[in-house]
Each structure stands twice: as structure tokens, then as C-alpha cells.
Picture: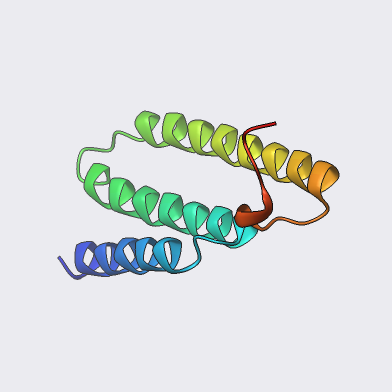
Length: 93
């Protein structure tokens, strides 16, 4: 029971960091990965009772794909604009 409260606290602190650091793309990506890891811990704690670990592997695979996509967008932004501040990025070009 304590593990679920700890995982929920990790998720909410990651969400709070994501909201606070909305102007800097790298910090947003780091907080998203923190949220994904906390969700993985919550899923792992809940599925540990049933010994169903296959869903955990699917979740980890999807989270790796999400992180690779975020890093590729970050590299694209830095190559085009020179920084990773969201306010300097104009989507109207």
C-alpha cells in the first residue's frame, strides 16, 4: 500500500515539474520521462500480484519509442533554431 502512495507522489511531482518547466523543451522531456518511470513503477506494483510481466515489457518498449521521438524533435529544434526554448520556436514557417 505504501508503494502505491509513493508511486503516486512520484507521478504528481513529475507532473508538477512538467507544468512549471513548460518553457524549456529539454526539462519538459526529462519530466515526461520521470512521469513514465513513475507510471512503470505503479504498473509493476499492481501487476506483481498476478505475475503478468508481459504488459510491463510492452509499456517499456512504447516509452523508449516516445523518448526517442522526443530526442529527435529536440535535435531538430536545436539544429534549426540554435536553442531549445519553446518560445523562440515559431510553428508558422
